[in-house]
Every structure is written in structure tokens, then in C-alpha cells.
Length: 290
Ligand SMILES: N[C@@H](CCC(=O)N[C@@H](CS)C(=O)NCC(=O)O)C(=O)O
Ligand SMILES: [Fe+2]
Image (tube, rainbow, N blue to C red):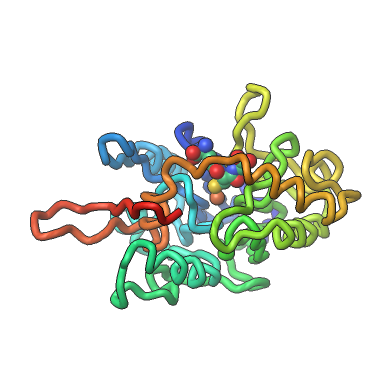
């Protein structure tokens, strides 16, 4: 049984998102983490070029996709999970943290989705609870709940590779914002302490990299490098120092440009809203709600 997955990462430039294909070297089984559906908000046009680049890689290596994993309901891009499962990998299961129910409960009234929109996470194939273990071929995977950025945030420890979602960024990028509904800087700090309890050699793969200082975009670091070099939280950073700094920075940030389209699609596991009578799908833009 292998403990070290092969990771191929894909960068989505519009949202600075890293998606990852994680594969067991001993079998052809793989998981896709945080796939992106292209979306041009000005034209309302979706696209699958980014997702198809991952499909090409999977086809080239004859992989079986067992899981489409979401580290959280993203606020800055649309998920390609539904498209990938429907059009390419019908046997893959879409999984997200059980905290998605809290996110859905918050946003259902904002988008006026009504009682027919379930707020129990049932749009997803599987809801992960903290500490849950599952297999990807011969790889062992473990769920580590990392709330703080959002209430549904999970990290996935797959062999020696940790997919941190939006908790930690690269060391010079610090941490994710905590001002979305259900977010909390103190909660994120405590989540990060759980990640810092992992071995220093644990490979860390981030979900976003905003390339501070104009350096190249990167996605891989390690627990040791985060613990000793993260600009927001190192092993010697007290919670009382991190929280006010994180909150002060959050107060300066604009909402992500795609938050309204993204959230209403991503709480449906990436499925677009049903078509109206004319066959066209519409996204809502609630006024003065955020
Ligand atoms: N300008 C970006 C902002 C995206 C954003 O807010 N990203 C979140 C993660 S979903 C974050 O934590 N950003 C951290 C920061 O900007 O400090 C956009 O409009 O999409
Ligand atoms: Fe995020």
C-alpha cells in the first residue's frame, strides 16, 4: 500500500485557484480536488477548458476517478464537480464537509431558494465528518475539519500529502480570509494548530496562490515550512496576535468578484440552476444582501 500519492496540479489564472489530481501510484485510482468551471461574468458564459485539461491528464494516464472532493463551498469560482461527474466520470462521488448544511442554511433565504432547496447537503454524494477515513485505491485518506474560512472547510490528508483548502496559503501568502458568513479568525487559528501537529515533512498543497510580490505561482510547501515561515501563523504566534491582524486585513478586502454566482452554484455541488420555461438557466443577483 503506497503512502505517497502522485499529485498533478492545475492553475486557474482567473481565480488564482489550484486544482489537484491525486493518484495512487500502485493502482489507477484518483481523486480530483477543487475542480474549476470557467465562468465569464460579463457574458454569463461558462466554459470547461480548465476541467478538460484535468480530464486529458486523467485519460492520458488511464485513471479511474473515485472522488471529486471539495475542500469547501468556494466563494470565488464555480465548481466543475457536477460537470465532471455528469459528463465524464459518472462513478465518481462528490464529497464536501458536513458543514455545507450551515452554508446552505445561511444562503437559502438570501437567494430565496425556498423549501424545495434542501439544506441538508443532499445535493452532494457524501458529507465528510471530522476524522473520517476513506480510501483512494490503496491510499488512505483522512478528513481534518478546518473551519474558520468557512464552516464547511476540510483539509484532506492523503498519504503524506495534505490538501489544506483555504486555511493556509504558501508561507509568504499567510492565511485565508475569515469574514465570509460562518467565518472566524479564532476558529481558523485553532484549525491551523491541528495541521501544525502533523509531521514537518508532510507535503502541503494549497487551493489558492496570489503570488505575493509578483513571484511565480506555486502550490506546494510543507508543514515544517509553514510552521516556521508562514507570515501570519508560526508555531510561536499566539492566537491573541493572529486574530486582530486577520480581522484588520479582512476589513480591507472587497468581496470576491464571483461570490454571488459561485455560492449559488457551489451549494448545489456545482449544478447550475434549473432552466426556466424558455430553456435558459439564470443566476440571481440579490441586491444589498452581502
Ligand atoms: N480578488 C479575488 C479575491 C478572492 C478571495 O477573497 N479569496 C479568498 C479565498 S476564497 C481569500 O482568502 N483571500 C485572502 C486574501 O485576499 O487575503 C477575487 O475577486 O476573486
Ligand atoms: Fe475559499
